[in-house]
Image (cartoon, rainbow, N blue to C red; front, side, top):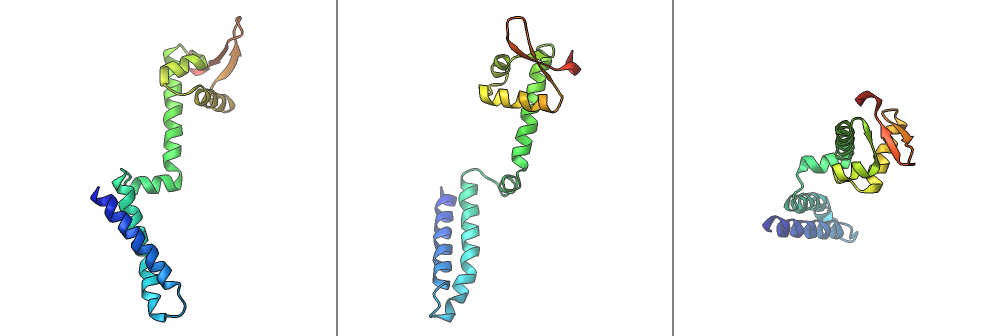
Length: 136
């Protein structure tokens, strides 16, 4: 809680410094203008860390690395689920096995199919199944 309050205070100070530095009638405000972004950055980092974000995680979010890691993890979970079902899985089975939403399950299976890792088949009952040839 102290980090959050301190962070909010620093953000306010940073914004005030930037605002004061933008006043053109007083050249001595240049120092405020230069310190403002530093206070703002420190304040934002304190607020983020108070909410459970580390600097490393913020960098990963900014660079998209966390999204790529999540995508890789989803692909691994889907392939593991397909292997558990003998290399043949439906969207519903995937949802039950992984906890993904139906839309997420369909999207990842479509993505893997487009990459040639699985093949979409229709069985005799018109149920769409995704076949992973390498897992059979």
